Amino acid sequence: MSEKYIVSARKYRPSTFRSVVGQQSLTHTLKSAIASGRLAHAYLFCGPRGVGKTTCARIFAKTINCEHPTPEGEACNECPSCKAFNEQRSYNINELDAASNNSVDNIRDLTEQVRIPPQTGRYRVFIIDEVHMLSQAAFNAFLKTLEEPPEYAIFILATTEKQKVIPTILSRCQIYDFARITVPDIVQQLQYVCEQESIEAEPAALNVIAQKADGAMRDALSIFDQVAASTEGHITYQSALENLNVLDYDYYFRLVDTFLAGDVMQALLIYKEIRDKGFDSQFFINGLAQHLRDLMVASTPQTRKLLEMNDEVAQQYGVQSAKLAPQFYYRALDLCNSCDLNYRNASSKQLLVELTLVKLCQLVVAPQPQQAVQQPISKIDPSPAKPVQQSAPAASEPPLTVTPPTSSRIIRPAEPVQAPHPAEQAPPPAPAPEVQAPTQQPRPAAPSPTASRPMPRAVGNTPRIMVNVSNDASAQQQAANSTNASLRTMPFSAEQLNAAWQGYIDQHPQERALCTTMSYALPQQGDNAEHYVMIVGSSTELKNVEEHKAALMEYLSDQLQNDRLTLDVKVSEVPIDTPKILSPREVVEQIKQHNPNFNQFLKDFDLGLA
Ligand SMILES: [Zn+2]
Image (cartoon, rainbow, N blue to C red; front, side):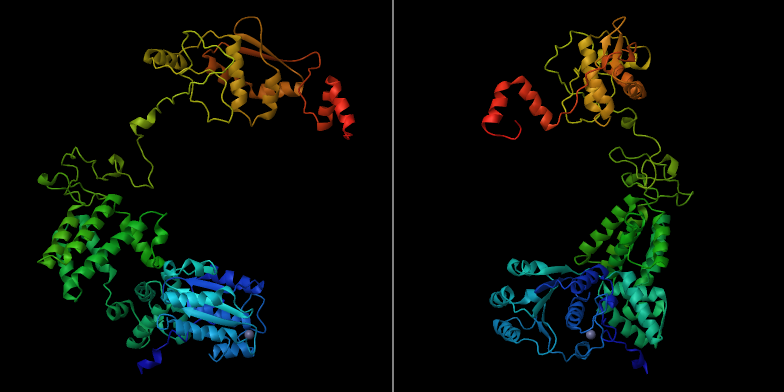
């Protein structure tokens, strides 16, 4: 009776690229290669077992021989060629399992076959599965055929271990990497099978099956068969757990709750329950480690996609993980790992596991006075009766307490840091480079503008402003004070102003119009040493300078340490000879005017420019 529910992996083996589970981008690439007729002579399909490599190779062979492929590049599954493929009687496909046929003779048989052209259809496809298993001699024998294949021959090599395929083969193949199939993709396919076979299954049960299959669709289908058969078509979560000897994750959720509460007794009782169900202790500890890992990845949005389970279960992980701080996971995983490593040599394995559980219970709650190093790691206060901050934090280690959140120093990544680190409040003054314009004399002992804000990032040209780095603390203090409190009144020369002027130009290349104007309209001294005038060529330029004047003045004042600098911008009454960009022809004309020999040169050599 139960045989009714045996649905084999073969029955649900995909017959089109579209129905291949979990390899969408790869099958899309294959389809478009076929549709465009760009076929290589050799392909290498790499990836773990059970992810669809051979299936895709067969679909590929069928599709390139199909007489009426669909516009999407799929096989029609109706023409004589497709039917021959689907009924496994096509002569255009040859499969060699190199795991059991890895000798030179096996390869010779294959290369003999390669010589025979297709009787019907266009291509003969040779699939070599587990190609890395071929012997060295077999590899070499095969290489010859691979180098000069007949027009109609296409090789598809499949391997679970790409690194074992020799480079001379790799370099002749188009390589396709097959990914493990995700749990949600497997669950979706199993749901489809359920619908087709009228099998009822709880989503959590399919999730257990998919996780057990570890990324292989083929395994998932055969596990599914097994469970479906034994449950007579009503797959519940409990029946899946029992059939597959999987420990209900509910135990792990309950255990972590005991860790949060520091409830050692309850933790030990849950462990006994698990042992009573017949589960191995090491299996249990590794399952607990997996649970902690899943909680850890569920705790941040960035890593949540690493959680391979359906949404319903994932949400449960999200809820529990929100109660724990990152440090908890690190230490808890470390404890589980130590337990696993020591398990084999432990004289009392049960005691080892129990001791590990005791330690796990102490990660969160208040440490005993003699265990001052162990700090609580809970994210929320587990119990008001056990205040977590009664012991002084050990000097050597920062406190791991995250309770209550407002006073915590350990803050989960997603949360904003509430109090800035002291060092962040006042950024250390960026050491200004000592750059000196070649045309400038260093200023005498006058204090330098070290207190100016840090220079904007270098913009290519060497800044021409003179910036002295002063190590004199009092000078810095003085400068800082004057920045904050009073008007800066540092005397400056016309050269220094020009240097600062040029510095602004160098650092604002994006303000092209302004910088062009500034390059020719240099400031000229006006009524006094701190008053300057800038004469521009047009009212448009005037307007542009006025728009940027505030920023320019702020920059100049900072550079010169003088807030009394004033700048009047005026439009020239006579046309200003602004620099213009000359065309090559104009350049030649200018040279001709200034150098009569050049003109002669052009004539002598009969150059068109003359
Ligand atoms: Zn067809």
